[in-house]
Image 1 (cartoon, rainbow, N blue to C red):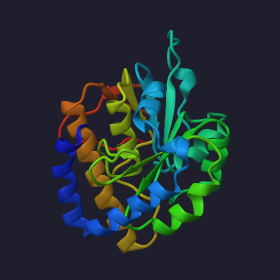
Image 2: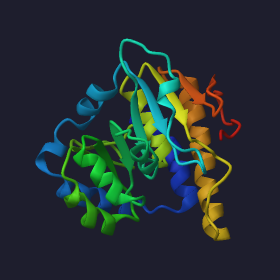
Image 3: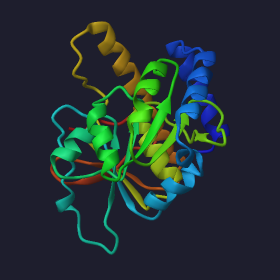
Length: 247
């Protein structure tokens, strides 16, 4: 999605959650300083090279979802690629799957993400107003290929193609990169494993936005988006603002 189309959605999100834009800018500035020289060069082109024309499996962190059963997919000329949303990296690695991309705002199992990065995963680090300390601590520890994103207008070194949470940001990135098809595995917009009522309500509010945003992308984007069910079936993601949760 182009930034001009994305900006009105994020304006609503920032207003609802009270995100001060000056903090977003400071975080983006910090990420740009921390990225190694190779990570600052043509980030979207490097991601496009990995995802364009491929079936892209975006792996979420729904409770008890586990890794995607790639072996169920029919054999085709080009194998599918896996994009892990932050904490879903662990489930992938446990199944012997090294994601091609990891989309992370650095609040997940970072030791696993560093390990996957060493094994070839490109990690897309997202800067937002609340993760400046995590950026300083963890960005220098990634030994492999990186790219950067943030919530504001695209900059030469860090991009914004849409998306709010790690999961839907990964979907937006796959669509922008020209994925042949996007399969969503482990997405559940109605359940979170969070005991604190206030934190749980905030997470569910974010997932409600993720649900809506992917629906908007299914309506307007160029890549088909499908829900990959536990029984192996694949159904089109409903275009619009609502969808049943997947388990």
